[in-house]
Length: 351
Ligand code: ATP
Image (cartoon, rainbow, N blue to C red):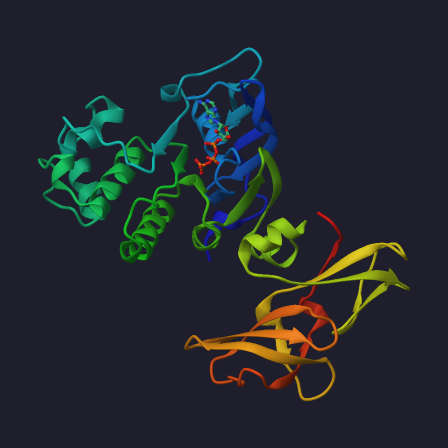
């Protein structure tokens, strides 16, 4: 257990009502969230949703049209104040690592401290990431993974209050990525660093984030712990980020929705309203009784699990189920399929 995810930790970063347009097109609109001290928060969203612009405004590289940014309780940017990046107590790591090509590794690491760093501390940092003896090498002599580690310790060397990372793993070969993510997380945790990391990859956000903030079309849609977003998404878009979805539409009647897979409780939704029962593929399970009869259209064995595609009899509805690996029905055969209402998400129609 680490202190990082304590919900009542005081925020290191507070962003309020941040807005920024480019040529009258809003890139970031009314974004507010905070990042608790010592935690890793991932800013997640599809390409073009405004993640990088948000991060750049927090860094002081981009000027907001309105809104405020506080770091460690101090105003960095609002209607009257705009501090440059070097006065914000931040560390920055970019996708391309942005090492200075004309400086050797030691000079790169010392850069943020204007050279005022003990050679012993540089050696310690290099040793910490398994690159002892690399101080005199130049960036072009390093592999992508090595450059990433240097960029990380360069940003950590001045002991920033807040580390801002923009897609820090996306330029790495995918075979390297898992190891680099783990090592990065260890280093960030050991140093107690507060992190805001931009990613478009939901799995990466789950792996790295104590908290995740989801953005879409310039807006912040939902913020919370990974399991909160997964189990209680505010809308279908957030739910669909984390897996394929099966969707069964119906009308609410007497507090529940009738679907071909049975009735699902829909507390709080008005009678007669349209609602959607959303079920993740791993929550559809073959049953001996109950549920509904479905024809298997495709069945693929993936080792630990199998992916089954089904057509619900008499509805034309296509479903996907993920089942334990050895449960592999023949295509063309019929099986009964059911869903535990406990795992179903009930959402209003049409978002
Ligand atoms: P990606 O993951 O692809 O970088 P993103 O979520 O980080 O996407 P942003 O880079 O913040 O998104 O861009 C948000 C929107 O603002 C996009 O439509 C983009 O084209 C636009 N935009 C960003 N920077 C500028 C700029 N300097 N001038 C004009 N438009 C910009």
